[in-house]
Length: 409
Image (cartoon, rainbow, N blue to C red; front, side, top):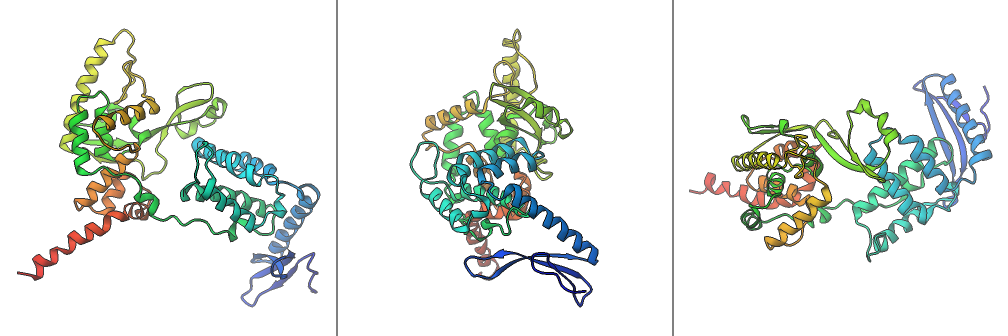
C-alpha cells in the first residue's frame, strides 16, 4: 500500500510489529524543520482512527479556533477541565489566570504564542509582579505555580489540536531552591521559652502552643474537635481541615460524596470542612506531657467559659472556639498571634512558622526524617527532606562526633 502525503499522514509497520502514523503539522520557524505528530498502535486500524480524529479536530480548529486568543481559551479550560478539583485549588487557578496570565498574555492568539513571550512574562513577574500595590516581584514558588497552570492549559490545547507544540515546555522556570525555605522564620529555643513565659495566661495561648508542639496546619487546628483528642493514649487524630473559599452553594451540593460540610458563609466567601487532602495527611500525632497538661487545663477553662455564657453558647465541640462556642476566624487568630509575639518581644513571623519550629526541634533532637514526615502528614519523604535540608548540616556535625566515642579513647 502506498504511503500517503504529509497532509494526510504516513502509516507504516515497524520491524517490531507496531504500527506508526506520522503527519507533518507545520514548520518550525526557528529551525526550518518540519514539525511532526506521531501516533502508535498495535493494529493499522488503531493508528488510522487516531489520525482521523486528529485531522477532524485540526479541521475544526482551522474553522473555529484558529484565531482563539489566550484570554478565550484559559476560561474555557478552567471551567471545562477543572470541575473535580478542590474548591481552593480552583480558586488558586482562577486567581493566577485572571490576575497574572490574562493581563499580560491574554490578547495573544494561541497559535502565535511563543516560548520567548512566556519567558519574558516570567522574567517581568520576578522583578515587578506583585498585584497588591507594593514594589517587588513574585517569589520563585509563585512563578512556578503560574507556570504549572499555564502549561496545563496549553497542554490541553495541544491535545485538542489547537497547538502543535506546547510553547511552555521550552521555557526556563525558576528552580525551587531552598533559599526561599530558609527564609521561613523558625523560633529559636530562647524565643520559644520567651513565648511560653510571656503569653501563658493569654486566652489563645493553648492554640499556639498546640501548633508549636504538634506541627499541625492552621486549617487542621481550627477544625479540631475534642473527640479527636485521646488523653488516655495522649494522641491526636488529624482527619479534617477547614478552608475559606469563594461562595458557591450550588456547587457544594454536588460535593456531598466528598464528605464536605459547610460551616458558614458571607456574601463572597464560605468556610468548609472536609477530609484531609491526602491519605498521608490523615494521621495520629502524639502529645508530649507538656502539651497534654496545657490541653487538660484548656478543657477546664473552656468548660467554665461555657457555663458563664450558657444563655448563648452553642456547643459545637471545637477545641479552640469563640466565647459563644463557634469556630474561630483565622484572621482573628493571626491578629492575636502577632499581638502575642509583640508581647514576647519576638520579631514578626507567620503562623506557619510554628509548624517549621516543631519540625526543626525534632530534627535537632535526632528524630528521624521519616518520623517527622509522618508527624507533618507530608505525602513524600523527599518533600520533608527538601524542606528541612537546612537542618541537616548541624545534625550531621553532631552525629559525626559519635566517631570520637567509637574510635577515640
